[in-house]
Length: 440
Image (cartoon, rainbow, N blue to C red):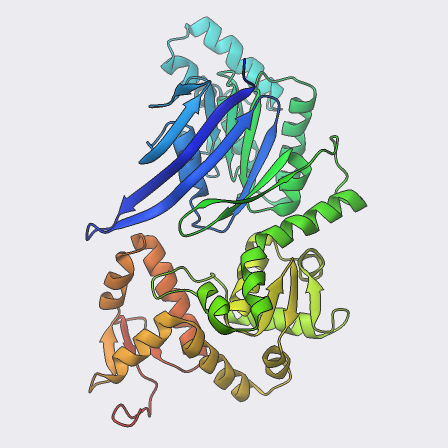
């Protein structure tokens, strides 16, 4: 028999905007999950990773391609697949015991057997003695343990973990991750395979037999790294650090291709179109990162793992900042390294006024959405427009929440560069005071 448990063949998924426009979220996803392996899936926010997990769990259907579980088409939730959510997803009015028993009750397991299996799962996950507690009486780590116990109590073949540790503080998340790995290595759980969606590169390297890097717009598997190291893995070992570096390089490979061109057609192809996502990067943090990169010990160039350590930024925070600096031409992102460009060097050593001017120029030339908004404002005698037409335009390609996020980022960047202004009370976008629309 095949050791393949779950297989996706050319899977695609699209959603429709409120205007009826088809928006592809996943396209041509090929994926295989085999007996005896842990696979980690990394990618930017909004790349479709969570949608992919819900397709694998049978919670939503794929529009294109084929999903096979144990070589049979998957048309709905499978008894052998369980999922752990980032948000814990516990019923607040039920006790720990009752929350864990839910899946068994839905499957018609008799009360005595439900109770026995739930108590066993609760003890296995380290919560013995808390069976009668309500979720509000537990810490975040304990609530996530309840979610994991609820997933494991049905003895699934496949455990899908969607950012299961990211809502926890660092030490709690590490402890829970180590406990899951210990159960896996000791074969204390019946689960045959685990798929972990994560933003944490080190976590992926410590857990997985394979790391998959997901691309965005639409989501698809871009690259894969096999890891053959035995567990447990020392996060400070040279082997693990080298693998972390390699994954960073894979995560930044698309940006690196544009950086190496030095501009031109290839570089333009990497820049966003009007309705594409922008990195959720705060301007103050971008400037802080540039300054760290400029000073000792980096002198203008650093590998991302070391930069993360120096700045104490998580991967989920550092990567959007690095991509934003690359997009704006202030740094080059290539092969897991971030290096100041000549413009970035000039920016760091300039006065606040010069920085604002440079930032505004880069935003106008490199962020099409900002250029479009500015041009639209210049056509208005009043120099102002409501935000709704721009949100409506973004809705044609993005979900409502994504459209709001993209417009917020564009406005924040443009306001910092004094390209435009925004009234948070009225929702009006307008040209900066003193701008002459007739001569602009």
